[in-house]
Amino acid sequence: MHLYMIRHGQSHVNLPDWNGGFDEGLTELGQQQAEALAAWMPGAVPHVDAIYCSTMKRARETAAPLASAYDAPIVFDERLREIGTSRLDHTPWPSESLLAYADYWASERPFSSVTPEQEGGESLMHFRTRVGLYIEELVNRHRHEVVVAVAHGGVIEITFDHVFNVGAFRRCEVWNHNTSVSHFEYVAHPRREAWRLHAHNRIDHLLLYLPAENRKNGAGKREDAG
Image (cartoon, rainbow, N blue to C red; front, side, top):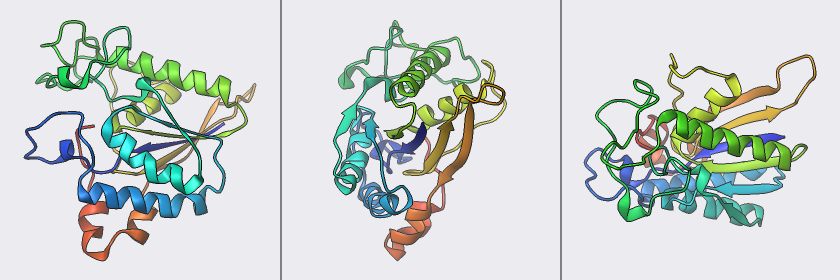
């Protein structure tokens, strides 16, 4: 299986002065990033067998032009939502119930809830289980196919933890630009590693297709927060 993990475009929640809700859509720049991705990716990856997407607004709005470019349906899955947006049993909180994160970083206290004001909120390790189970399900469903998953920075980062078998207390952050592409391959070789990493954080489309006045801001830094 070839798995292309894509982070959503710039969202209002990525803006440093944003004080609104956590489940928000894309900014104007984020829309341009999503359109640039859709213009570029079919040339780099001519065929995909399935497109999966987080149910959160910023991921949905990123996946829409990509699905149009491939003329393919989107399969939405709640397990691709960002960390802290689900309960301990992996079911999502309603958008209006999403609360602020703890004042500690998730990897600092991986067994503690990342949203302690919400009783029953997930920890980093619950999040890793949620995403890991999903990745293994994709492997079983699409063993010899090409899959795209549009999700969040945390989902991609925890996918690295899963495929590299990183312990609970990680030593390295995995950063992802908005609409960046990371390419994993599941090979299941009986005497070698099961996964191959072909590429991480590709932003070719931002350099090629973003309007010139937005290339510096749109491709030059990684936006934090989901």
